[in-house]
Image (tube, rainbow, N blue to C red; front, side):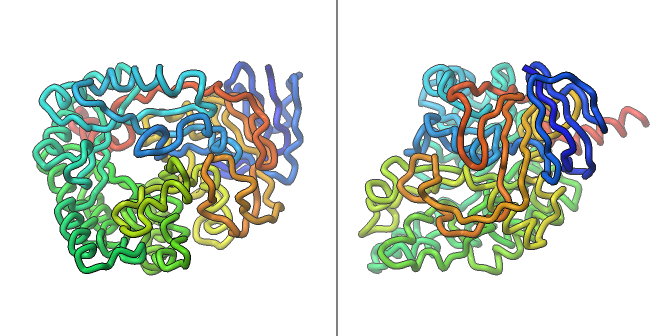
Length: 472
């Protein structure tokens, strides 16, 4: 199957120009002006933007009480062609075998977008830490560690975090962290409940900004001692982002991402009537508007590298899932659906409002996530040899986010009622048409694993140092 896209305004993370793209056998074969290829299908993209399929490095399927890959086609309807999922590690099972089993049991033949796997350390032991060296053999180059959730299987204390940083570096595996001080969160939660402050509006008070900033700082110092890179997921506030910025400016390989909801929402959502605030409960919490404003600046200036959705559509949705915490906010399952609307929100409220450029949009939503995950340039760019994951985008579209258009399996939409400017008119996954005008039109279950390579973007400064040392 061959495809020729003519006269598009191509946007990459570094450039914008008019050209044609020719696709054959799932790959981009040629890019240039007035390409003269005989293709099975030709599309005239005059007046449209053409950019890489979105790479969402942070989603949750089949984990933390979330829905599975049967709803993953929602990503493609919104222009995201590759998702980065986190694999739970059962007790007594190695990280490598956890990936093998998960792919076989939950993903093969079910996922519609292509996918990347990250590991999660849930059985901290010498065997698990030693097993970090084995995960690149199954296409995994990043492993997540939770500093939060003390008493839960995925909580990892400082000893094992430090050992993971040391051993991860030996294998070229990037350690990702969920940074919150678990003890502070536990104590504050218990105190609020004992005081009768059980309503959802008290949820953000249980997980204060400084609990996140302190854990981020602690992890950064451990990375410095271990002389290892670090990637901080879902940064929510100015204090934590400044810790990352300072570490990077001091020459450390410390990077971070934020997520769509931290850029779109502020903590006033928790005061919505009729328990509606529970829909927005996620960890860490959504913060005040001043933090929202700073995060946009952090994305624009490159202090944070990427924007993921942290998609987590809770089983039971709002009515049968979130309402379990109706009388106790600590029982509200955290997570919200968002993979379908990530690009819509980033374009409408980022590009259209002048917060970020079109090139920055591609950088933080497509290219940098692919680099962080070790799948660039296969994913995240429009260059010869890359997978033909392509979005033809109509900037003239105007509409509204509606629940009736959501494909994520939940009973509510996080961004219901938000204005939308522009949309993915056509979405191609490896040259196959998968979505048109926000509707899924492709074949389900055809997703393939993008095999992540070790020593990915977070190791860039180490590579530069080694190169300098070699040239001395």
